[in-house]
Length: 101
Image 1 (cartoon, rainbow, N blue to C red):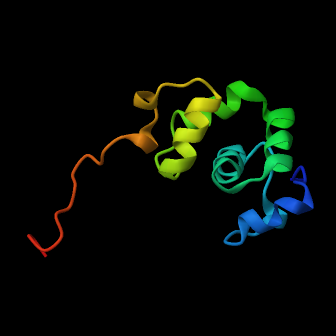
Image 2: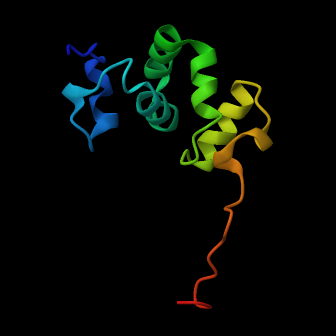
Image 3: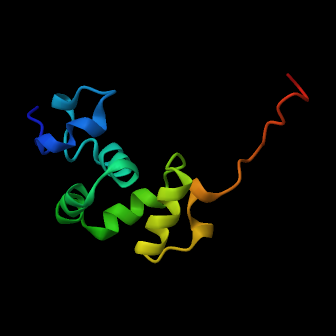
């Protein structure tokens, strides 16, 4: 199956995967999430053009591992309440280091 190529300037965001095997459609979640967390203006423009705001919001509303700073920024930019973002919620079972280890 032929993969839709990502722009070459995205390669630095995907140091931990085989960049040449990433497909725009099949790996949309990883591409959007990683770019929201680490992307520059050029990359964000590419995301909006290729996926649209609604698809980006969809990923934002389900990802738990976006940084807190990025989560707050994108919540403000896309008018999404902080309480709706899993990445901004407190952990379900916090680990109190030193008490049980």
